[in-house]
Amino acid sequence: MLYKIIADMIVVLHFFWIIFMLLGFSFTIYGFFWKKFFDWWLFRTLHLSGILFVGLLTLLQRFCPLTILENLSRAKYSPDSTYPGSFIVHYIENLVYPDVNQTLLRLGTVLIAIFILVVYIIRPPKKIKKLLKKNH
Image 1 (cartoon, rainbow, N blue to C red):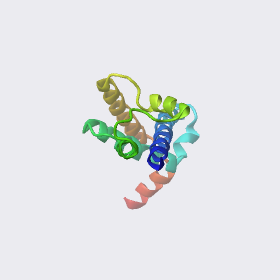
Image 2: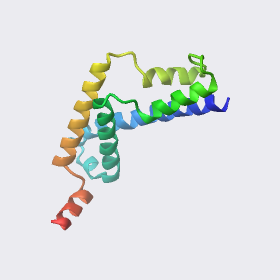
Image 3: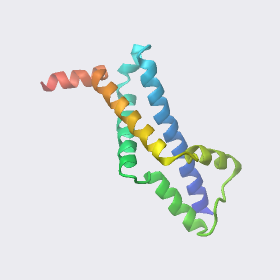
Image 4: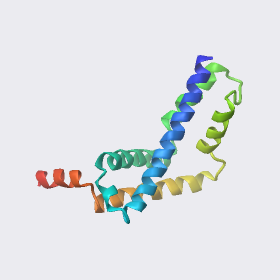
C-alpha cells in the first residue's frame, strides 16, 4: 500500500511541475506587458533550468525521472495492476499523460524551451545582468 501512495504522490508532484512549467511560459509572454516579471530572477532561473532539462529529455527521447519513479512504485505495489489510484489522481494522471501525438509534444516542448532561453538571454533578470557585468 505504501508504494501505491508514493506513486500517487509522485503523480501529484508531476502535475505541479507541469503547472510550474506552463505558468513560467505564460508569465514569460505576459512579461512583455508587465515588465516587473522580468526581475523575478529566481523564478525565471529555476524555470529556465527546468524547461531546458525537459527539452533535453524530449530531444533524447528519455522519460522524466518522476515518470520512472512512479512506474517503479506502481510495479512494486502490484506488477499487474493497470491503475489502482484514486478518483482525483486518475484525472490528474490524464493531465500529466495526455493522449497526444508524441512528436507534437516533443516539438512543442523544444520550441517552448528555445523561446524561454531566447527571452532569458534578451531580457535577463536585473540580478543576473548585474552579476554578468561584474564578471566582465
